[in-house]
Image (cartoon, rainbow, N blue to C red; front, top):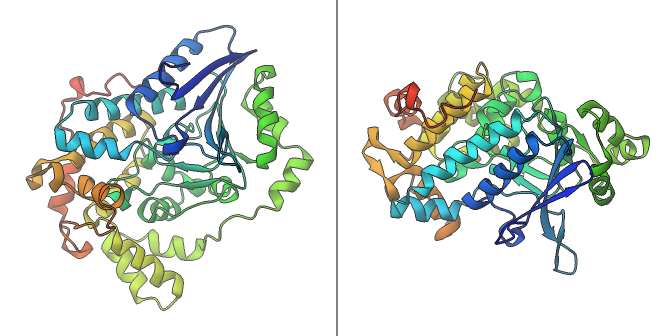
Length: 381
């Protein structure tokens, strides 16, 4: 257990168990939490006693008290991002370097890693869910609410988001772009359907399954097989996936660039197209262009290289030197201000229109501020 109890660490039988314990903030990650999770995983990685790792979040029970499950992780602590960016706090750089290192550690973890994605799972929560690595089991329920909504705050879907979103639906162009650009909210069944989770069970099954983790020693396939019993599968059948209009998504979101995507949506007479275009018009135009480029580059990248690219991007988000913008003038700080600080929900994006973004504004985001031999994530392999 950590000193401030924001992460609860336990060893039970053959399992290393992690509980995110910041329920008032929907378990949003801060730097001490990232360090505590990393330390536990590194310890268990070489422990002969620990055969698997499981992670869950603390949520709110019906009576208002806090209890396990009900929320996984709403993402990174964006209020901290805002404060640190304005103050020039170097801890902001440490946060992203260490968070992305943790994402890579989880993705490549040599032991089964079981993530209980009950309730909210967004942003940084997706980063610690395992990305669908070889030893990862990602469990959803009927209460799961999953999304990567970063373009809403002038950011991009990070924590490996370019990598795992680009591989949705078998890496067919369209779905990953749609989820990355719009931040569309998925329920548990839809998350499994598009490949962002592995199995769905009823939330009533969670406590018993968690308690059984210490008795499991098998590989990922055996663990999954133990979950997909007939009774659980029947319950999952009663939890339909969100309506994802695959034909329209593949038609519109496989187009060449964000300008053409929005133009095509606005030229379509369907309610779905009009609503989707209106949603995109509310996002940061600059970061829509950057995000689309990221997803399409990431489709052909290995995870370590993709995370290094994201680390480059996030530096440019808070220090957009090629546009002479930093601090409060950046898209990211302005987006967080509008959503979580002043809460006026009226960000002043610069430029304000998707059509006003030029290639010269976007390309420098993909140039690393560090030489390869001095990159902050050089150690990822």
